[in-house]
Image 1 (cartoon, rainbow, N blue to C red):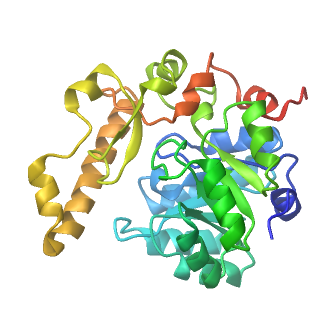
Image 2 (tube, rainbow, N blue to C red):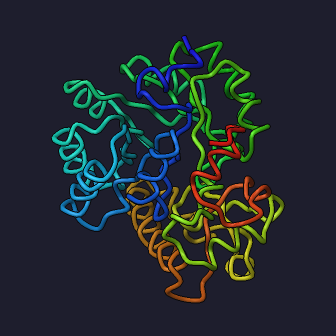
Length: 318
């Protein structure tokens, strides 16, 4: 069953908080600072252009800072590099893996061979039951308040459903933005929380100053959901460019997506083009301001260090 100390006991961290893996945003410096602040963090394997760069990053973090950290693996067909990414994770004995968007069966089997942990993103208790049967160590309950690929159900409601139907430790993702929201979740007797959006505007974040400042200037009411970037709902800041671009796929693409023979290829193409657009916007390569974020930007009032943000969340002073 879920225990409040699951993350602390398994990973030996001071606070039961994961700096969530954010596409394009998470990097080595952020993980190192997270570890120094008493929490842990994870990086999407897809943040690296090559397998060699990916492996070098894991080794770089370990060389510079002791402490457990994780890797996020996309486990559906869109990730053509999964096999090699998993191979690296196993050879480097990564402390924990977070799986998203697919079946974690192979990842669980291989990671457990060396004693690593596997946490699976879930948005429903039905899927949580499936990963429990596969041997997952915990579930990350992705609520509707999350940034990026959010779930359809409010976090508190999802946690209650999982507690009723699943026996795995629960880590809550979505909507944790300050000490009050952190304490509210932990009072539900969960294993920990995964926090992403409010770290985008951290000093250690590699994204452009325009992206960081957007997280400060915009609020919860400025977050919209689009299917244009990855083919599935994704939350972004409603910038003038997003308003001009629109948030729904064209009728033609929606029609093609209904054809089984084309769906897989269209989804992969949409994902690749959308991710390129996000990469360009995140690092200021062009004027097309498409920035992923969740409604937690409501509580981002200035650009702070990761340590300061962790102190805000936990209510600590050191």
